[in-house]
View 1 (tube, rainbow, N blue to C red):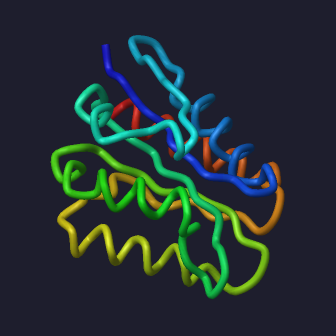
View 2: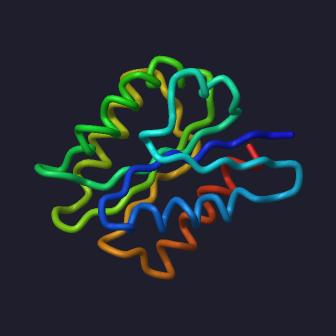
View 3: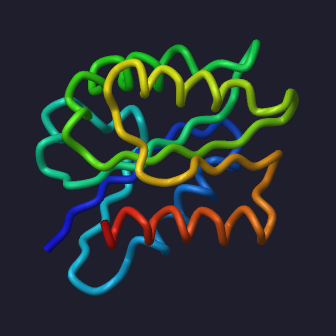
Length: 142
């Protein structure tokens, strides 16, 4: 059975809604999916999963949330080079620069992103929700 973790940080509920859509898309036959907040996910959990989806809102000057998500991601980052990984998140301003920076960071660390990242402006539209489901399904079938 394939095991997938969906880990997110959400300040307003927008990225949480996206995380729930990722979970929904990943729930196919022979797949176990676990949803975690960034505060609840630790390095000890990484090896339990075949694939991981990380979601974080854009904060400040288009960056990852600094108090909870960034420290968690920095800790698990070296352990992700042998995993299937996907990224998603929401933003309220800007043009998605934080996601491009995050994708570049993953590439530099040797982390393979197995599907296109999903971003949504404010609360996810139906189109963004569907893209999140596709992201989840991609992790489940790889």
